Amino acid sequence: MPGREENDAEAKLRMLFLDSFTFPDAETETSYIMAIRRTCYTSFYPLKILSKRRFERIDFEPVTILYGGNGTGKSTALHVIAEKACLEREAPYNRTGFFDDYVGMCRMELRNSIPQGSCIITSDDVFDHMIAIRELNDGIDHRRTEVFEEYLENRRAKFQLSSMEDYDQLKRIVRARKKSQSGYVKEELGMNVRTFSNGESAFRYFTNKITEDRLYLLDEPENSLSPERQMELCQFISDSARFMGCQFVISTHSPFLLSMKGAKIYDLDSDPVDVRRWTELENVRAYYDFFKRNEHAFEEK
Image 1 (cartoon, rainbow, N blue to C red):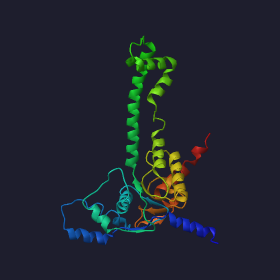
Image 2 (cartoon, rainbow, N blue to C red):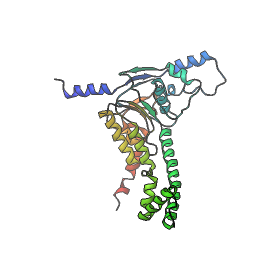
Image 3 (cartoon, rainbow, N blue to C red):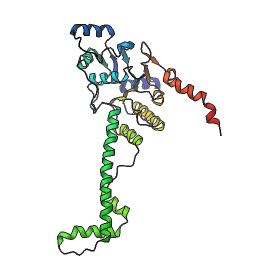
Image 4 (cartoon, rainbow, N blue to C red):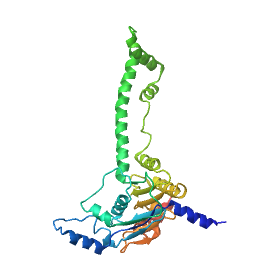
């Protein structure tokens, strides 16, 4: 009978859709630029971004993380992978006349076919979701004010039924006199989506969006999330990879997400880009050193 380790290995392979991804090297990019003979461009984005750090290949795990400072290309890599894999997306992204050619120079190896419904989720998607909720709440607030006024008018109204056309108005008056103001408003509005903070709404966006047996690319999902919510998201992603057959590729600065057990981390701050443990990363070490220096402050009474 197969041992536990063998079963775990088989389960791990079933979770993989992306196996590897290869970006063009500097020589290939230079040859392309020379061949097109266009000198009027100040930017050849996304060329010369990833090759600058000699970032040429990713070998994926169930959770793969791209870490690095601003301008290192972690989001660029994520969008290139999403385009090559034909993933669904909502928010638009930075495309230039060279983007499609660059994607064509990339190579992608699959372990299993990518399921329909797989997608890339960006911080813009989450922000747009929160804006939509805010606009909906603004509409509800406006309607609530109207219902408050309607309640008071109906409570004070002296009304006599003169025809069947007045019946609905009579029902509203009777209902207003039977109910409290809050009860009347609640019944008239029927709903109020303002039950979550921005951080809670952002977290719920991920938990509602992510379903089993999918590939998800997440671009800085920690935005708008408190440390507590980031830890919850870390656990949710870990559980989704382990128990729901999902695979994740994530760009992030968050030490909470970087600490995810079993995640493979590519450090785009290093040259060449290499795989690192989360405790070796520069930003994480900066947090550690800061709290270590101020450890006494937490012990003061």
